[in-house]
Amino acid sequence: MNFPNGVGSSRSDWQSSCAILASKVVSQEQPTDKAGGADHVAAVNGHKTAIDLNLVPIEKVSEENDGGCGGNSNNNNKPVSKPLTITDLSPAPMHGSQLRVAYQGVPGAYSEAAAGKAYPNCEAIPCDQFEVAFQAVELWIADRAVLPIENSLGGSIHRNYDLLLRHRLHIVGEVQLPVHHCLLALPGVRKEYLTRVISHPQALAQCELTLTKLGLNVAREAVDDTAGAAEYVAAHNLRDTAAIASARAADLYGMNILADGIQDDSSNVTRFVMLAREPIIPRTDRPFKTSIVFAHDKGTSVLFKVLSAFAFRNISLTKIESRPHRNRPIRLVDDANVGTAKHFEYMFYVDFEASMADVRAQNALAEVQEFTSFLRVLGSYPMDMTPWCPSRGD
Ligand SMILES: O=C(O)C(=O)C[C@]1(C(=O)O)C=C[C@@H](O)C=C1
Image (cartoon, rainbow, N blue to C red; front, top):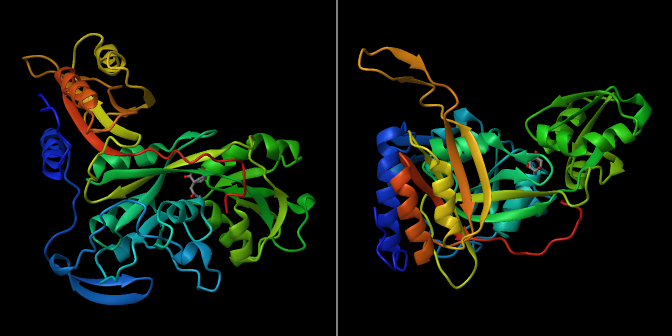
């Protein structure tokens, strides 16, 4: 497929190129869109609202970073809201002008801070799973989701790579958040009392060496999010358990900070992506990044050819990730219909530094499409260029 020069210079051009690329997906992926036209009854954070999804007024947001968040993230006087669960997801409440941003975790989680950085005055909506955050946007309960995708120490958050493919949302931005971990325990608890440290698996991985240096050779236990770990210790009055979480989580859940800055490297950064139902219009007047995912059926040197499509055009790749091709662990290989197990097929996720409005990117993708059986543009979005320094990520 060829991209006409100038694709992306108008919204309709860009959307049609997305649609063309997406059409390949439709034939291969299970649609997961749950938003239908039926009436739904909402129960979000205890508030029930009857609503027809077709009639929800949509707040038009012309630019990213324009909504503004801060609801839960900066206001300690607000009650701590409960995360959405899968059962809350049939409903969609009416909403006002404030951008609603879904994140995984409870207040005090780094993802909440990332939502606040991405959309400074938004209403941050806690969700108990990544999947729920995706669905909250699909069902119009939220306008955006902000989800961690990779960490400079712990690596990729694979679950979100898989969910990006299973859902139909578009990446519309990225934020990088310095992550500053604290070891939290109930007031009066000392390090010597601890038999267990709990946190999000990424946070445990990011602090592993420091915990050992602190003499904490105790059991590690993974929970859904860092702030949730602090909340759990506080709610169950656990005097033998510490949580790894932010200083803000210590404030919110009445915990003491036993050790501050316990990540193994002070330059610990998590990259989050912002997701929306619609793509944004790519531009060329500021640095953009584009994220794609592809698979290939056969052929030699396909990966090499794909990567060289970018190299020949001087487009830098910033990330490549592979995930098992879950839809096709087994393939039929001969005319006699004899099935042969064919494992270890992969989907490849690539981020590159160019906008889809850039002719180089359009031509590179047109070439990539010749070698691949499946190609989808996950989003073309402004790069987070903010310089950062190690700080308290709270
Ligand atoms: O548990 C949290 O606070 C999160 O926001 C999740 C998460 C992650 O998934 O990587 C986000 C940032 C940190 O890297 C640790 C945990």
